[in-house]
Amino acid sequence: MKSSVSRSVAAGVLLVGVALIVWTAVDEPDDGLGVTEAANAPTTTPQAEPIEASPTTAAVEATTLETATTTTSAPVPTTTTEAPEPIPALGTALTLSKLDGWLNTDATSLEEIRADNEITVVQFWTFGCRNCKKTLDALAQLHADFRNRGVEVVGVHSPEFGYEANVDNIIEAAAELGVVWPIALDTTKYNFHVWQEGPTGYWPRVYVIDSDNQIRFDRRGDGTHTYRELYATVERLLAEDST
Amino acid sequence: METIFDTLTEGIGVITWACTLTALVPGLALVLVARRARLTVALYYIAGAAFLAWAQAAGHWWVAARGTAVLIAGFVAAGTYAAAWRAPGHSSPLATGAGLVGGALAGWLWRPCVGELLGDILNDASTAGPRTLGLMFIYMVGVLLPLLLIATAPYAVPAVGRVLDRLPFAIAGAAVGAIYAVALAIGQYDDLIGELYRISAGY
Image 1 (tube, helix red, strand yellow):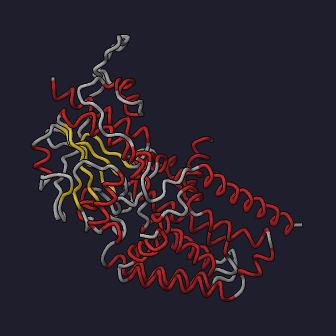
Image 2 (tube, chains in turn brown, red):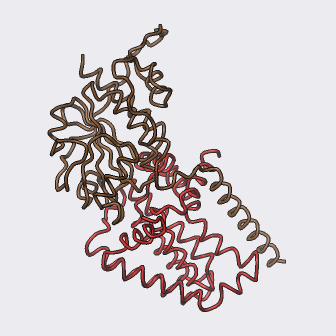
């Protein structure tokens, strides 16, 4: 009796497990190792246009919903009564050191990039990481929308595996994925470990650094809502700087 | 409930990803080695991995996987395979210990590619402890589901059990475990997994 019950339970677990794996595999579109939709997303959004003129993206939704500083062309109901809480500083940003070089820029240090911009978005990524690839359309949008407004994106490429450390592979992947913003080559993962407190680091992880070199945003993961928040944070910091 | 299910399926969705293999491969080998206690080892492995991964994100574990710590980890890993091999049954402390310590090692060494829900768990780990620990366990059940399937298969289909009980399977698990322990001790584990992934991906 006991044996038949445990056998039935085990069979149930087995069936449910297999069904879940099959269902998840079918449900999730495989972005493979090549180009994702994100990579193919246009990165030539006109800079001077209002945000509403951009393609409909999560970032735009976030801007519409969460910031009071969007450059709207249509009337917006003025129901806001309280100013949003200031974005707290989470600590002083570190520099990027012991790099193997830079791609997509003439700059040779993070300081040079910061000197030319009000806000710097720093993302730790590696081209083999699928979750990192999922964030690239949001970053491309951010880069396109803000690059002429004092915002620069820096991708710190910290390879997890050996093949991701090969510079030729990085250049090829960056071109395929449409990564046109500066890439810092953190081949030894020195910065990956120094920036990310604690015994381990994560891909992707994104920071926003303001003009005072303070970290104002720090999130792990590829969440759509995370990159909406990122976009909104950049908008708010730009507004903060302009007042 | 929806969050739990979504977390589970996000975990299942990354089973074959390179970032996951660092935790999954040693676990599969350990379950194969533990011929008389597969289910106990699998369950405790998942629990250990979830706890350590969560503890790191929450700031409760500060030992970095570098230098001497990794060398020691190699020896500890070898010990878990020896314990799993010798475990006489499900209630044996050897089975519990092998699973728990083996899982904790995996959770410690695991550097995940972070998806949406895992990102939320990690971001909130230091401020919402119990909830994020529970969700991390659910996520790990998804990631390490193949362990559970292998461990439960013999109960559901006795013929599978008879196949898995054959010595070559246990020896194969032990061989993978030995490679894992040595690669860990000499600091080459990430590169080994990366090379396997590179070959399978055709890079």
